[in-house]
Image (cartoon, rainbow, N blue to C red; front, side):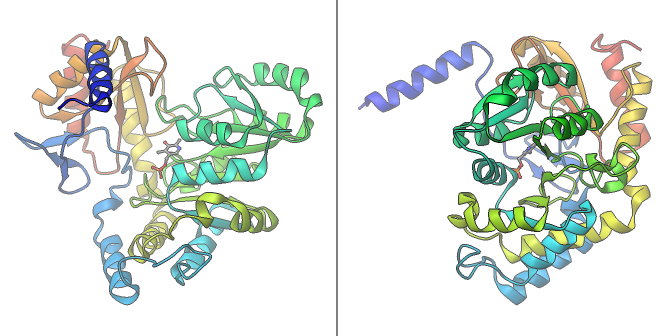
Length: 386
Ligand SMILES: *Cc1c(COP(=O)(O)O)cnc(C)c1O
């Protein structure tokens, strides 16, 4: 029997499939932080966000095991009830120290963090200005807040200034949102300019540094990537990329953190992170704080790739190769897979129409040989110049 529900789902899927926009999940057995087994031969992944390969680090795994034995597999409740096991405040103190902030609060994930933070800070009488390429969860938080909002052109501080001049005056509070490192392009936000504008217009700058912690600014993220620490009052990020595990966080002043703990709905109405996950993050931060040369490796590896292909210099471990149509990006991804490299095609709506791409990510443990073989293959197949 076909219900109208199934008919709707089938029609939508057929439409997406025809446009090369249907997505599917593939079981991916990550064996060591660099290699992946799917059906067929082992692949070298150039698309994980595990920049420091900490997902499989023995020290991080041991910490997760020990905490699981000590505290159990789950936290048992929301943090405001009984889920605030002692590892959570310890992790928050460590994050605040790394980021040079007064305090921090940890959420279930980066996505949940943004959904909770943004509506706590601004509401319908207020204004949000966001970079047009900001991550989907910043934009989702913006929608939930009910604030008036405008997008400014990507990394265009001049355009942000125009928008502030036009709109700031008619709103009570103003929040500026940007990725610190852009997730699909790998470029950094022009934070010194954004900080200056935020101060001049009494706006609050919030960076989503999901791809900054552990890999740029000496491992401390985008706030530290421009020399002196910049006064960014709201530094949000995730524990799921270079940190290797799971969870979201924000570092800010104590009153802001106290407000988020008492009002952010995704903190209040969602269960605290499992103890093993929190212990893993603490162990990962130990490594990030004590091994700066290792933390620099992902960007060095991205830089080698860019030099080999005459691409613009890498600013982060993420390097895009924009190919245009979704089908072109899918075909390039399939070609690489046949040659032993896993690089997922990124298509709309994750990126704007006409900018489907291969998104390469580099990790500390990629070898020079892996990187050069990949670059030469792209050159030989006419996907990149040399
Ligand atoms: C991955 C990502 C997130 C989401 O973080 P999760 O912890 O995976 O939910 C948020 N912002 C940016 C920029 C990201 O790349």
